[in-house]
Length: 241
Figure (cartoon, rainbow, N blue to C red):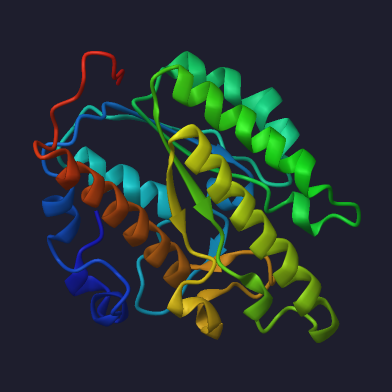
């Protein structure tokens, strides 16, 4: 777990978790198995940021979950340079075999960087992944990616086309989540999205500040959902892991 005292910039960042916040929000959560599927965003690609823990976002989420479930089984299947269709073909079977109570899906980011991009086809792949996990009893989290068109490393002529693809992917993913009943965490219009230090020098991934904020938003969304249940940590009979 990240210790706030060791990372002063993270501790002072208004968008990052405060000391003890994750423990409070996730108190009594029911999940014993956590799976992550997707491309390099899911895998955790990124660069260090001064004053922030060098810990990818999904690892942070897993560490926060382990505070209340020390035996949590965490499997990150995310792999860089993987289109959504390949995520479904190569990662979904392994995720289903784990029978995770909680699953996070972050894909489509690789697809939008390709010369030929079919939004409807990518949306269909994401729907197939999310639906399969939900049908198997997982609580599924989907994510709208940060708007990387604001990265200083993105050449000016590519900013607008990239933004259109990113925002379209986010809207489509949110629509899938709403249809399937997944929990969607929208980072695309996050107020920190225009900050240059949110992004890595490659113009494709986040810095560890971006990872810290991403983890915080997912944990806060999970915490809000647990609180809405009235009795956090009391799983239904059907809920695995």
